Length: 235
Image 1 (cartoon, rainbow, N blue to C red):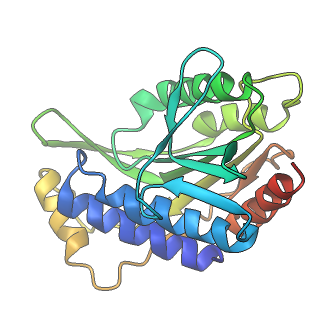
Image 2 (cartoon, rainbow, N blue to C red; image 1 turned 180 degrees about the horizontal axis):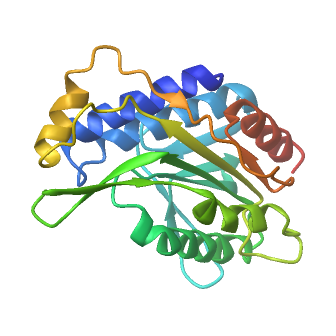
């Protein structure tokens, strides 16, 4: 799967989210399943992958240092779990929760990596997102900016051997959805706009930030999957 194919999968996952709602896992089956199938092809038959959208379609509990955690994608070799991948796709109401998303990612990673299991993260965020009040009323557009990205820049320079909270490798992917001409009144209008878009074209965000160091890969799925595959094969 190359970068454009990855963006196409992101678009499909977004459409299913609009169709089925936030409580449904159908959007995850598309996204997690595509990533898992890509890793399965690259790793070969000696490895087995468990996640939504592949095989028996079930997420697996991965043993952590402090508690067992159901992981989005688990990679097995000889029936032993050897790595995990967390996948986060934020679609709305991001800015006020940005630090919580980040803190949860660090804690999830530390729990798994402290148990000597490599853990990777994929984080997908639209560059512009809607903020809805309770009840679905549209409030405003939120824009991801350098303030939100700064923490990932710091993360990119972490020594993973010293900090268990740092993912072994992180993919941060900012995406760009087609813009609405007018603000929606509510989430229903927002959903209908994108559901009526033929061949929804999700692009890579064009804004560039200071160069990330080796721990974080920015807007390059192909590089991320190649490096993670190489790492897992070396275990």
